[in-house]
Length: 397
Image (cartoon, rainbow, N blue to C red; front, side):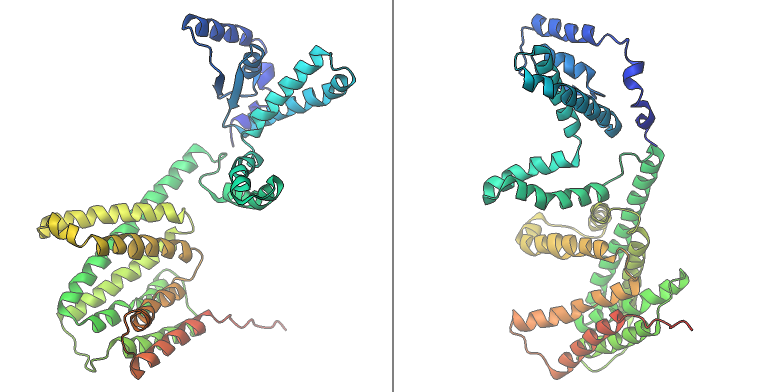
């Protein structure tokens, strides 16, 4: 529980004897001594706004900011009391200086409380949208309000979350990112080695065997798959064979063992994401994953290779695309999309990369599609559809 949640109701009583007037006078003297006359004063940690009001009475424009929602709620209550209690007096007599001053102070309290509200975020964002798209301010507010409400609930640690819980959440996030980065680095490096000793089609087939390994790993952690999922896995394996194994023969050599090791590592990567994604922010974990993967890959590059800066510059376009789009966007979307999804189904969907690559080669590069490859694509799509069919509910007697 936030410690200010209870204190805020009694804060003004506890600080009634605090010399806020002397504080305001001190700042006035300090400004005079330094020969400055600020146009705007920022009162950080303003609490319920007591000092902000006094500074405003000295003639300064004051912006009060506080992180405690409870403190600002008290400021909002002060605003309603001052505005509600003086508006009739001021309307009845525009020369009532006391009522006018109370109205101004109430407006200040309202502004301080407004700075924390979701509605304040909406108004701040809606002004440029109204100007750019030429839409009424109210329409822009109505469009943005649901978005701000959703982001406010889902983004980051809750302000009332205990410090111990925040530390635990950060630790889980870092551990998850490091585990994902280690599995991704090991899988990617193993895949590159497999391509040195195995034909591309065969390496692609062996790597995609994670669609079989992931549900097997799930059994170790108590995640059982239905009959439809296993049928989908079998159908996808057959489709991958027709799609990738165009050479006809299927011998087994050292490169094939490396390819299967790559499939196992990517299966671990999918399983690790399945474990951590419900507990952390997917985008943040993806950033940590790539950071840790880059460190491990850089160490391996410096130990086992002799990198040339000229060669890196010559290949900057494919490196940029592979790093930003294929890896950065692709693996980030994997983490976000896998949240709450059965990892066996996720592995089946990700195996469509083989189908998409073949279709892209046909559409973009003009490569011919054989009947065998078309049949493999059909089997792969059928496997995805089969795995996504809803389970038949048992009727209760």
